[in-house]
Structure formats: C-alpha cells, structure tokens
Length: 255
Image 1: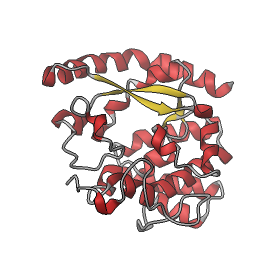
Image 2 (image 1 turned 120 degrees about the vertical axis):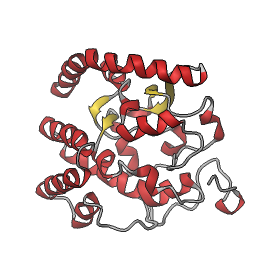
Image 3 (image 1 turned 180 degrees about the vertical axis):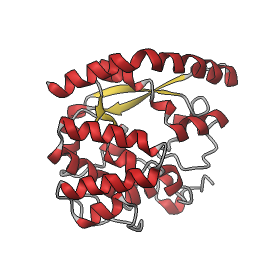
C-alpha cells in the first residue's frame, strides 16, 4: 500500500512538468512523418495481465511489424529524433500515465513483450508476480543495451544470451530485497545515470553489496563482467533459439 501511495503522489507531482515537456516533443515527432507521436506497445504486466505501455514514438511507423523485439544501436527503424529521445530517456515520460493507472510502478522489473515472457523459465516467472516498473536495477546497469547489441547478427537472440541472464537475476534480487527506501535510491541512481553513469554504477554496486548480492552481480553492476552467452535463471544452457523465429543461420543480418 505504501508503494502504491508513493507512486500516486510522485506521479501527480511530476505530471504537470512532464506534460510541458511532452507537448513540444509530441509536435516534433508528428511533424517528422505526420503519424501519432505516442507508441502504445503491448507488454505483460503483473500476473501475466497484458497492458499497453506508453512511450513517445522513436521509430518509424509500423516498426513493430518487423518481428524484432530487441533494438540495437544503429537500428535503421529509429528516427533521428528517436535516437536523442532514447539516449536521454525522454521517450519513457508518458509511462507516468501507466503508473497513475496502476499498470506500472515507478520502480519494478522492466516489462517485456509477450514473446519474451513465453521464454521465461519457471524461476523467471516469479518476475511477473510484481507490478512492472519504469526503472529498475537492470535499467541502470544496461542503460546502454542498444550498444551491447549493436554488433549482434540477431539482436533478439543476443539479448536472450547476453543480457537476459543478468537482467533476470537483477530482477529476482530486487524482488527479494525491495523496500520503499530501495525504490527511492534506484530512482535517484536512474537520474544520476544521465549525469555520470560510472558514478551511478559505483553507488549501485555498493548498495547491492550492502544488501548481500553475490560478487558476480556486484561486478556486473560495475560493468566489470564480460558479456558471454549464459543460461538464464532456471535453465541449464544459454538460449539457442528465440520463440517464433527461425534459427540464426537462416536469418538475414539487420546491420
């Protein structure tokens, strides 16, 4: 209850200035191609309930029909303005409305699309027991996810092999230690990433160690761990194929 009250109070406090920012940005997006400036992507929420996550549109119209979920840096579907919005996270601002509606919280596991959730292990399904968030630990650690996937022949498969194992572990760790105080700290670190990402990662790693995180999680929080294919929590081997997609050898590179 305290978390929900905090979400409502913060959402009402930040909504007026957010609307002032959204108005000119929406006009700029519309002027680019005369299409809706808002993208309402289908995401999986708490207890597998689907909802529409609101974002400022950063891609060309109908980009989601390409059948690719992950978005690497250099993706040709991203508009020139979209690159700037993604880099500054301004495209996430409309999600304050999702928070007010109770579909999201300011802090919680970042939501995934249906296809990604269908690939969850039994262990990872616990992530769906919580209300998804605008930010979380992995949002801070992998704020450069597009760069991580830049050179992957199949960005979706690269995400499941390189990012998802760590992302799921961070989500599960958060669920075991979540408090309102931790939420406020993660919100502060999310803002700090835009000013000094290395400092934000250092502070995050210290906080995780204080909460009893394993050394490999702390090391990844500092981004000292190399990226290599790993098995997600609950699975024995790294993912070799994405649900609903052909094997990597039959796919064309998008770069």
